[in-house]
Length: 510
Length: 93
Image 1 (cartoon, each protein chain N blue to C red):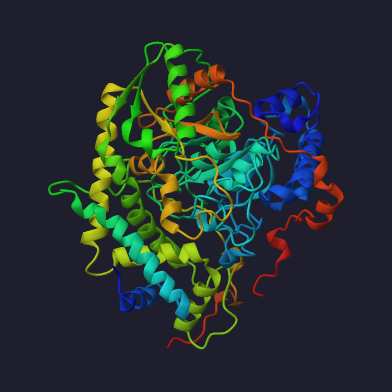
Image 2 (image 1 turned 30 degrees about the vertical axis):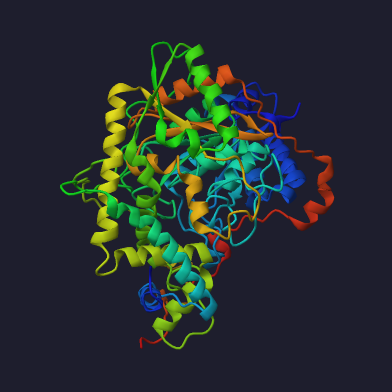
């Protein structure tokens, strides 16, 4: 049996029945990574040594001493701090950075006994929709290696789709979990703003960022959310969830009202996406739910408001990268000002600089009122439109992405075209709502996702509905990715697993 | 539209430097992005309060109790240049 085809729940059950050891499980995933990641390029770092050591510690415990998820492997977007393990945000400016602490979500998973396989590629500082903005490598879509996996959590989505981990964590500021989940045919959940602590998530746009799961099915997404959610004194914007999501088990949608957002469907999306979306609408009807169109006029302004608010927050957050306390410093600088300028100009990539420029411009004297303040008021309109819609509907739905996965290089020359990839997902972040993307079908062989949006902190019901639809739609989850073409010996030689590096390895004061 | 002088001014504020050809490209890219976001100016938003956070929270307090944090060695371990527990920088100006 190929354990790498399992969900995380599947891994947990095999471990509980002692049909597989944690070491066997970790070895199977490492093998899979060596066989396919040469082509997918999802991982920036594979911590083989650390993962195997953690697995043998689990195997040494008596079954009665183990926690429910102990020994199940997971992979992390490389924007989450793991103590002593290089965390780069796919940026040259953080190359070599080894955080002296764990992100809260990482600490929670560690306490629950999960095993970290490694760190996953992303658009630099999570800024992008294709993972092409990584300073280190271009991740490929497992369904078609000529295409992007989406972004910015493209490494996380591709890794799960290619069975290089049972599940993964990503982060979502304007669609960075849901859009790649849609393009790679996996489940991606952006929790309500405040459900999950952002402590140790390298900040992009603090009022929008949320950490969330990318998984093979809805049950796994619920389980991973329950593992990471909670109020955290280290993130004063975190509030947690009122109750755990538990195991989603809805089999129908009787009496539930779904609003189909007019502005995010129809001609906003390509025909193949529209077709799959309409089969999802039919499915809701067949499950006893009711679908009706609802207009949220302000969401058409979402991308414009987002591209003021997110870069403004980013320009402020990224001021910390100055070559003083961590990360890259230019080798040549006469004085402090020159050190700042050279360090940042050499360390950041083009898209990050572009966004810092937009944000700095929007916040600069004379423009603040016209851009930033106006964008914040637009954000209020969007919030109000959603709130009004939720008076009439239990859930709102739209396609997750207006298109299927695009080809590598197709949108890199036109930043604005890339920004519009997140048309359907951005309004949800501006309103702070939870939303999940589930695979709904295929267009020309490429996955299409359905986005389901719920009211604030409605994750339990949201995932219940997603589960009912998932069971009904039964979308095939395995991309046609052969192992034999990998040349595993060759890829192993070129991609030696990075050894685990601890703080102790580094001389203090060097 | 955004002028070349404005691009240079914003770059200085952001502590970024661009080579000549980058500057030319950036001016046109920023111009396009700014004219796209200018659609917000068409909206009548008089009397609408701004939203800075999607979930309204006020005065999140916690007891002021000492707890262990990073020690000096841990806090400076990632510094590019560190001497005797301090970050070293080039001279100012």
